[in-house]
Amino acid sequence: MRTHYAFDLVKPRLAWIWRGSFLDARGTWHGRAGQLIEPLGKDWQVVVDFEIEGGETRRLLGQRRTEDGYPVLRVACGEARYLDDVRARLAAGGSELLRTIRCEAGTLVLNFPTTEAYRATVAGKPAAQHTLTAGQSLEVLYQW
Image (cartoon, rainbow, N blue to C red; front, top):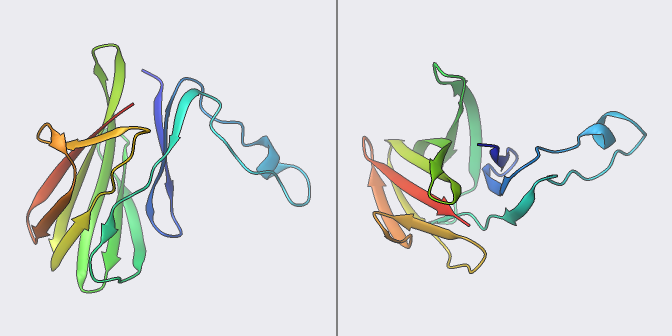
């Protein structure tokens, strides 16, 4: 399938999506200052991730692994906490990414931007503003 994604763990947010070859991290391991990493694959896109209403800063609480080895990020934003889980899946003409955001505590109001580089949809419609409360989840499909 060779479909990849990368998170910025400082913010924490989904940062890149791409297909094909993974990346060359050699520059971060050798040399004094290292080099910036970019995906080696084709059609990579910088993701403009959702904003959380209220202006609180996101904080990475940690991560866990699913039974099949996928990372799931645990994130806090103000009083809210959520899990962020991304999976590649086959689709007509290639592959796509399915992202599941599960609210664990509090209320999240997610505002997804509009972009022409890729499509982010929820139930077949463009992702826009979505409100989640504890126990609710949202599936966002990324296609490019």
